[in-house]
Length: 202
Image (cartoon, rainbow, N blue to C red; front, side, top):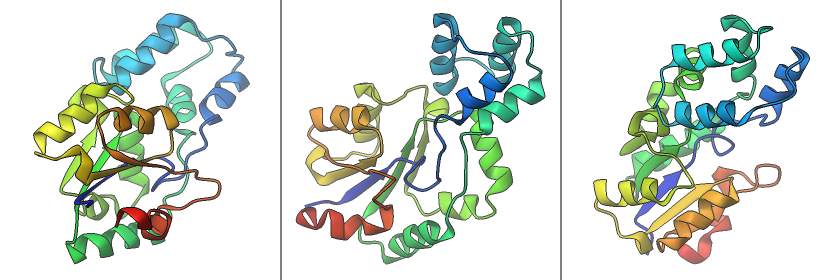
């Protein structure tokens, strides 16, 4: 029996254009991404480097970048947050039939943009019993320790949890711990179909 539902954020609630950042950087003649840049991306997502250090690393590597152009390119992945999805989770939270947790790989630049552009973000956040962002807890998916962290911190039984994420690596990792999963395909599925798509679990 499912008692807790753990939601990803990107492409579950807010729409993403995942190739956008690379596409925008290519417009600035940035085509190659060395290993140290890929590494700092992960470190930034885990909150292990500051926003200032993150942007400086890019500017030191690519002379064509400015702080403004880097931030714009970095945020280009973020699209719209359909209000009907917010209304869906708000109604569920008011019904109080389940515990709701948000678990997202994200970073300070993206969250600052969301806070500025999404007028109902704080109300959305309040719909959850816990709201875990990778850069705040220094952990990231698909590493198993982030799922263990949530299970332990919220005193959850894996078999009583459903984890929803659009990335197969993340759902496969959660399954290793016995968590039920829904690998949501954003081009043909929507989080508001949660109970019809996963009716066998409820």
